[in-house]
Image (cartoon, rainbow, N blue to C red; front, side):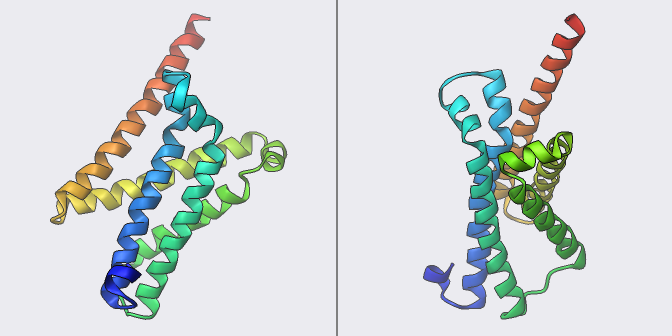
Length: 174
């Protein structure tokens, strides 16, 4: 990052990596909040769910700092990025903007079920981007970093599936 590598090619790449990992932590917390509170109500899980909007906005802010490092690395230092990554990432940022812009009570009310669809799709899309990114690290010589991300996303997904299955069983029993 800037302190470690200065305003250099390596410094920007360090900034990209650091902010990606920090954003990932914010994202996983927001994306798993509902499942954690549903499966194990009370305590820190309920507090996390209560503050999920703020955590999600923390992710959005952190991820835009990440975008800043990424853009400087590309535009100033000529880092080459394959078109599929640029397109997928740009779509991801469009989703993050849409989710952040609608993270308020007025948007929830105005959009109704569309709000839930946007945030469900957006969360899944961002999770997919992180999964693909960490899977790449797993297969390209950074297995510890890759395993960390793949495992956390997998666990969060398992929690979401468990809540879905439990709710489905409860609906069928009713």
